[in-house]
Amino acid sequence: MNKSFDDIYFMKKALEEAECALKRGEVPVGAIVVIQDRVIARAHNLTETLNDVTAHAEMQAITAAANYLGGKYLKNCTLYVTLEPCQMCAGALYWAQISKIVYATRDENRGCINLKTRLHPKTNMIGGVLASEAAALLKEFFVRKRNLS
Image 1 (cartoon, one colour):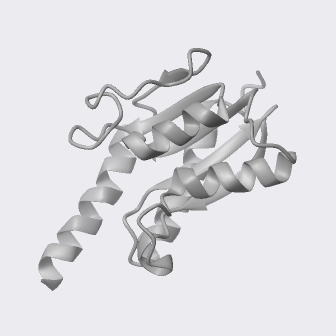
Image 2 (image 1 turned 120 degrees about the vertical axis):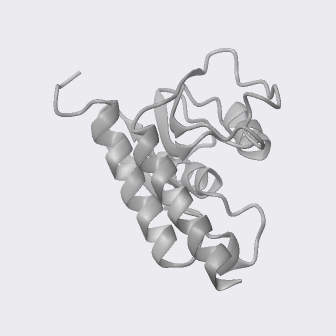
Image 3 (image 1 turned 90 degrees about the vertical axis):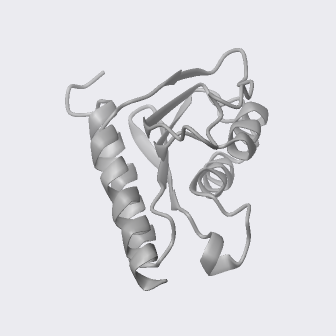
């Protein structure tokens, strides 16, 4: 892999999407889908904007990537997401047969790891890439939200 295109490089792109979500008043989660070092989908949470509980960053990214590829499977693709996927998103990633998931920070309460959600047997998952940056965005969002209440 080209040294300039590593997990940190792509996670920074996902963090840019999370910042877009923050600016829109959405929970700041961003996601991108990459194939052969090329970004084919960018997304961030749109649950408030679309009034849709399923409009998580990962779900938006899955749909955009599938449309780009012209098929429902995301084989040989990597999802970079700033927060560990929830059970719903992990289930969708299972059915999409994504090859790899790279997340930044854990979601101890709603994340797929503690909920023991199964991923596709061919999916690899690694975490902790730029975790402190992603966690800081989430903390900023919830501090703002509490201060407005």
